[in-house]
Length: 115
Image 1 (cartoon, rainbow, N blue to C red):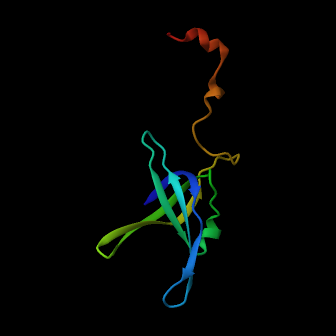
Image 2: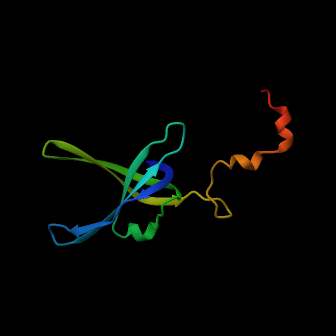
Image 3: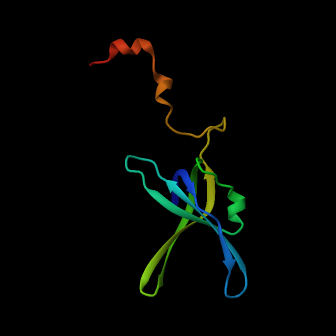
């Protein structure tokens, strides 16, 4: 599955050791999707992917994700994990998206408004 959107928040990194003594790290990001009804999704990165992807707040990204749910004490918990990240940027390094409204404003168009 793919998820596209803008990173709006970065949660603190969490680390620890598993029962077998292996160290682990997890970093979570909040991604806001586009469209008429934007959604906010908490996405996890694990281990070396945290440094490999180097995601930052404000970036437009396209994430390849997997969704997994687990049951614990009669309750279900769902996690969205990213395993691939692509930055949505144009050739000049600027984020791809709708242009600013001021870009298309011309004084001559004022007379053409129907109201």
